[in-house]
Image (cartoon, rainbow, N blue to C red; front, side, top):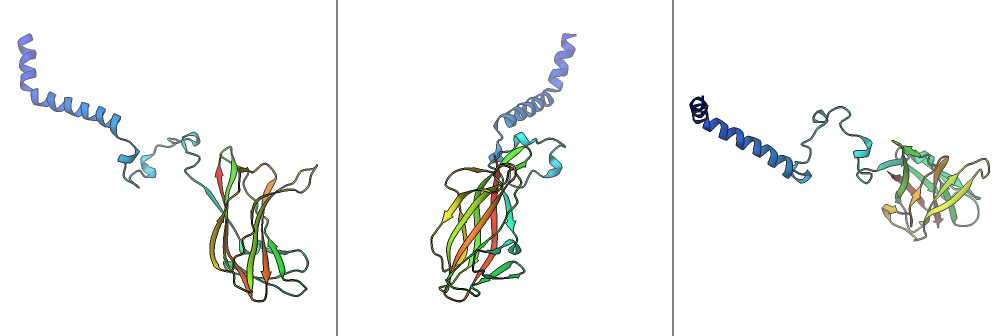
Length: 212
């Protein structure tokens, strides 16, 4: 019997050697392959089993939610009123009638309080605009507005930048500390404009949120 086993092993030595190498290679790969070894885009949806990834497996910093504010959300505020004209993808603000050179516009932004059971944090507010020497962006503010039965409109200023801008471009404004949105709470961005004539254009405005 022993001679038969020995003969079998000798006759299949190459096959056993190949099997040993394959098994050791698999063990090596399992211990050595990391995220850096996977080519970008190599893992597709079909490679992931149903329910293979849970919400707890996601890095909360790995993705953000960009909430675009429609141009038609921007309305005039205060007295005297500004003239606001809406176009596809933009809103044009002009001084209109009345005394003084300052005009204000604001928008109410409804945001999701939770996604997947996680509260949302305001990371930044982005404004793309077109100003001019005769239509200056005087101040950008963002407030949180909370409505309850006790305090219908309790507001807190979370972003404030009073740098005068007479250029055109996109700027990102960040809160000085963490702003976690609670139930029945929304954002109110506002732009203070100083006119000597001319017009101010509001293009893309975006609230950037992130699950905590």
